[in-house]
Every structure is written in C-alpha cells, then in structure tokens.
Length: 221
Image 1: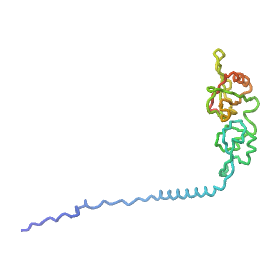
Image 2: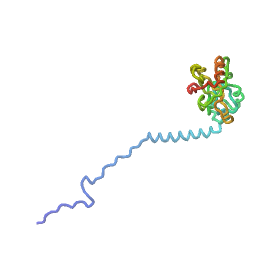
Image 3: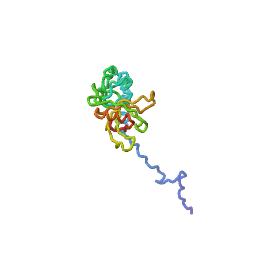
Image 4: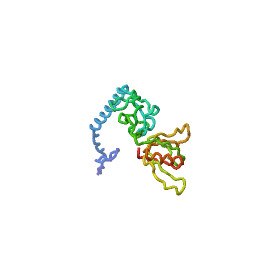
C-alpha cells in the first residue's frame, strides 16, 4: 500500500501568511506646507523686485564720520555724503550741509550715524552762559586712553605732595570738547573740556602745577 506524501514546501520560502508583504501606508500629503513654500517663493521674488525697482530711487544724505559731542559745532571733516533709499525717514539732505555746519549737536553723535533733523540745534547747549572751556596738558596716568570729543570726564585734583590737601572732584561731568591731534603732536594728553565757569579758575591753577587728572564716565554721554 502506498503512503501518501505531504506536499513539498515552496521553493521560494514559506507559503503561509508569513510570506506575505506588510502593507505600506500611503504617503501623507501636506498641502499646508506646500502652500507655505509657494508663498515664501513668491514673497522672495516680490522683495527682490521691489529692491530692483527702488535701487534707482536714492537720495544724498549726511553721515557723521567722527564723534561729535553734545553742544559741539559740526565740522566739514566730520561729515560725508552717502546715497540712501528715499524711504521717508527724516534724514538731512547733503544739500543742507551749509546749515548743518552752522548748527550744534543736540546729543553725542557716534561715527557712522546718518544725520536727522532732531540731532542738530541752532544754539549750543554746552557753550552757553555760565560755561568755560579749559585746556589741559596731562601726562600718562592722568588721562585714560582713547578719549574722544563728546566723552564725559571727571576733573580731579590730585595733590603732588602729601599735606597739600585731599584728592577731590573739581568737575563731576565735564564735556571733552577737543582732543589733541595725535598724528601731529604725538601727545594724546592735550584736551579741552567744558566746565562751569565758577570752577574754571581752580582747575586752571591746579593744571598749571600738574595736579589735575581726568576719569572717563562711559555711561554719561
């Protein structure tokens, strides 16, 4: 009697459910991200177009090249002409530089600043009644490095010998009006400061004997 044989296994592998492939979920579409990408592309193209269209719509303005202290008069070498987009900001036109040179800085103006009408005044707020300018020739150790016009300093009496009194402040917030030309004199200790006229005689007397030092006030511009 013949014995029945079991069917052979599939040569390619198992023939049961294990041989079937797992279903792959359909790729999810994100229409919101696609729309955002389109908007970004369109926005970039629009911005580029506006820049190109406005590139020829430029006006001459005034840029400050040197620090100008509050109350100081504008000078020719502290101003330069630049071209900017005419976007309605109240910048001073280069054609008005003659008026600017007859005015004074209302606040301390740093290099690189585009001049606006609010930065200038017709009369100095520092060189008015009750003020005096005092020249100081200071030695190393009596003046901080890097002082610029428009900085604020304390003017301090420093006795040269003991027994001549104590160190004290003669001017608590003096405006540095000018700084010596380092390229020509090589001496950065020559400065002119604006102080109250009542303090000027004492400062001059101590300066003549080399008993004056100044300390910068960085936060007092």
